[in-house]
Length: 203
Ligand code: HEC
Image 1: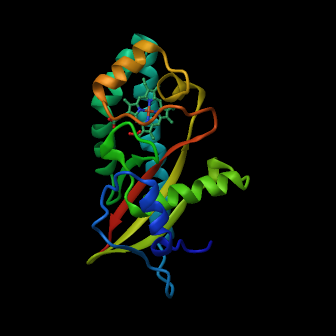
Image 2: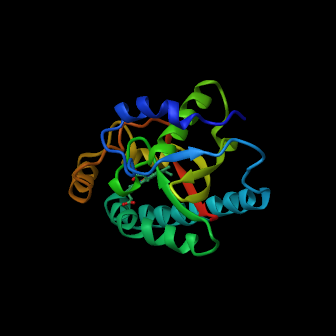
């Protein structure tokens, strides 16, 4: 696959994003030569995405079934970060979630992530299946060389309760209380809700 021209796309990303998370870090994709993320690291990243996604879905479904969406909101609010930390501790990859429109500002994309999220939208528009879509790169971030991996997260029926176009009033009120700057609504079935994003510092 063609390497992403982060540098050239940067200007358009800059103007479309109100707040860039780590705009001060210069990020360059290492495209010269044969520098690639090793296949065993990619396999590990895929396995982590499965484990993390499974844990999140389990926590969400359990709370939704037993106590409904309001309680489930609190569960997501309190447990999303510790569940990510638990899975990050399993390997030297760090795992998190991001998106172009986020609920929690801590999940806002950095420059490279924003570029990849746009690339995912383009690939989806071109007919590619989200199930198999992913993107991997070696990035030079200042002094550090970092392996990165991203995989899009599709909006399913269950997600619409809290991220859909017509969210129940009580749910909206609870979201506003927990996240006054929430942007993560208005999604429809099959949309890219966001992405899993993994980072591994190699040197
Ligand atoms: C009960 C309400 C609820 C449901 C249902 C729900 N979410 Fe969320 N979602 C949240 C909350 C709350 C957060 C913020 C978590 C945090 O603080 O990190 C969130 C955050 C996210 C994020 C991280 C980016 C961001 O916006 O901060 C993604 C990606 C995401 N949700 C995807 C999904 C998907 C996919 C589904 C369906 C499988 C889903 N959500 C269902 C409440 C919900």
